Image 1 (cartoon, rainbow, N blue to C red):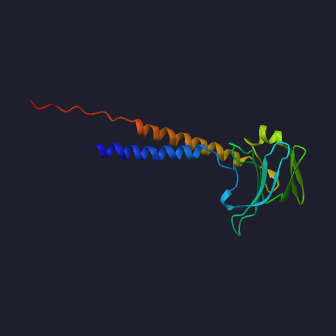
Image 2: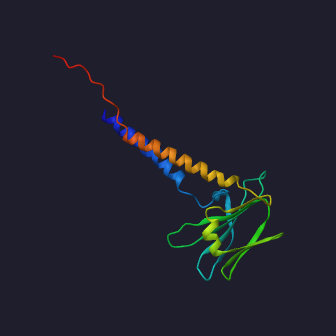
Image 3: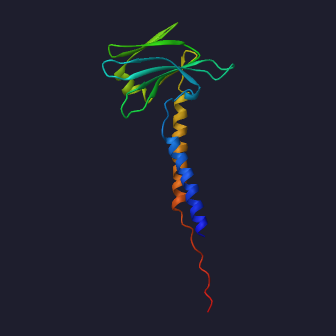
Length: 171
C-alpha cells in the first residue's frame, strides 16, 4: 500500500507542476520565442529598460513576424508589448525622450515607456497582416484556465483520501 501512496504523490506533483507551468506567462503572448532571432536592441536612457526587436519565422510556408519586448531589469521579466505577423515589417528601434519608436518600411509606431507599463504588458498590440487582432489574447485565457484546472487536479490527487471499507473482524 505504501507504493500506491508514493506513486499518487508523484502523479500529483507532475500534474501540479504542469498546472503551474501553464500559469506562469512566458515572454510572448503571440509568436514562438524559440523561432525568433534578435534583430535590434535599445535602452531607454531615462529609465534603463531594454527594448528588444525579434524577427521570427516558422519556415517556408509561414510569413515573418516581428515581436518587440521590454525588459525592465532587476527582478521583472522581459515581456512582449508589440507583435506583427507578416506586416508591417519592423526594421529597427529607437529609444529617446521617454518613448520607444518601432521603425518600419511602411509605417512607424511610437509608445511612451509609461504606457507600455500601464497598458501594453497585459494587452500587447497585435497586428495580423497590418490589421488589429485580438485572437492571441484569448490564448492566454485558455492557458490560465488549463493551468488552474491542472493545479486543482494535482492538489486533489495529492490530498485525496480513499475511504476504507470496513471488513468484518473474525471472532
